[in-house]
Image (cartoon, rainbow over all chains, first blue to last red; front, side, top):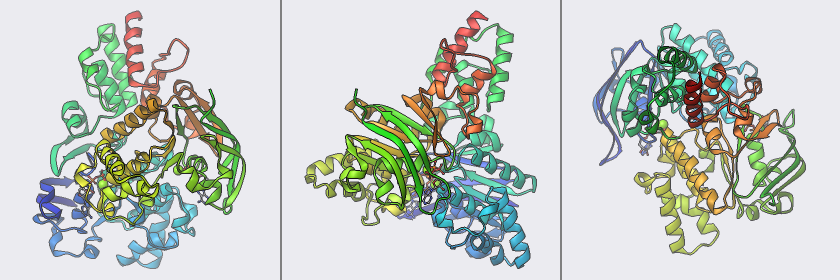
Length: 285
Length: 283
Ligand SMILES: Nc1ncnc2c1ncn2[C@@H]1O[C@H](COP(=O)(O)OP(=O)(O)OP(=O)(O)O)[C@@H](O)[C@H]1O
Ligand SMILES: Nc1ncnc2c1ncn2[C@@H]1O[C@H](COP(=O)(O)OP(=O)(O)OP(=O)(O)O)[C@@H](O)[C@H]1O
Ligand SMILES: [Mg+2]
Ligand SMILES: [Mg+2]
């Protein structure tokens, strides 16, 4: 499935534009959307799932123009995990919460149950079927909201800040789930402030700044441009920052790559001169 | 020096909890110190924060043993209201902190200040200061429920910091902030320590804790697994077993077998870079 956002403008209040003509094409590649608080990231994904409609321009999900479809219809194609699970979770039993979407899409009881079970197991909550979501912690409630969307088995799956409140194991689990969805051919879009997560999971990154796309490219390219990133209140992953501070010639994206890069650099040059200027351009430590 | 916060053999079990949320926790925090609290989900970080402001045991139902003394006050022997004049808490979920009683960000931040009866011009001064400090100028007249996630989190921190508590507990306060916003919160909090603020901050961002905290309390299953300087705690080789990822700089240094003179691994970017430069001169 392909999602096209064409010259979309949007505001909540007249005279305070939130998206100022955004054009993006999503097809195949999993994409991370990053950028400062209030840049318009959550607004953009609410336009893709049809909760909001553009003031001008258009959003197409496959051959559907979101302007012509209700949110309920669009839910057949687009699943959106909300930033705040409290805005999404509304049933008093996890089982009902996770089965609600699949049933609404017309899945039979058995299929919906199987799909919900699998999604809950994917987020590590197979034991929580009978719990009340409001007795769960914030991290678990977020996982329930993820499972509810994944269980719907839509072609497009959008995650707004999936890793909020998660510990290291939780972040890994969500990463594994996204890899599984990618392998099934789902179109994945995720908003996150966790740049290590972006580098690990997403081949493409889009940077939004004050309602405009200012960088769109391969994650490695995007993180190799510290100057532009800094203007957008974003920083590269930690391993990348280390590589940049040391003046490694290649942009490294992970701890493993940094280790290899440093070893290679040492054997080539017999030392790590690095450049002081690179080191001076530090990020938001 | 007298500790500003004393936690002595603190245990707590929620009424509906199967296990103890806190189990024999003891530590001290000194005036002006920044204590980072790390640990996996359910380790007890939030419960500990709630114990510092007296919500445990006064608000939640459960069973508490041991003692918490904050700013010289035994939390058991006072009320949550009284204690809030000394200790502030920024909640893990900013959503739960919004009063719902106010129509603008400005009024929301002013709310707590009005409650303690500050004069109007002092309120205005402090709220303006917080709005500038936490980058909320664009939305000062907006409805608190119509903010982006990060803006709401900024507002929640601003509301507490405006009260100028002696001690502040921050429960994962930067989880929804952009990288610059998150750096600004750490910097702002660290700067206020010069005026005597004592900081206890639960965080998953280990690189930030490594850089800003004086000491790190590592929690695991309600117990204190370690409480020491960041480079000591993050140099442990069983961190992953305790549910914590070491800072990326520390992992790189471990792979390259690069240690500081005291045998610990570097935990900050600066430290790692300095060590790498030196080692390459010698190698
Ligand atoms: N329901 C709403 N009514 C009015 N303004 C809104 C509403 N929701 C968001 N805004 C404003 O629109 C702008 C963009 O918000 P959005 O939630 O899209 O940002 P974001 O990029 O997701 O930020 P964050 O990283 O903080 O989640 C912000 O200035 C915000 O205050
Ligand atoms: N209000 C509550 N009622 C019952 N049990 C609770 C409550 N709050 C927390 N618990 C339980 O207490 C234990 C410690 O939870 P706590 O929220 O303090 O951990 P945490 O380290 O803050 O976790 P997280 O990283 O998910 O925020 C967990 O087993 C949790 O389920
Ligand atoms: Mg958002
Ligand atoms: Mg917590």
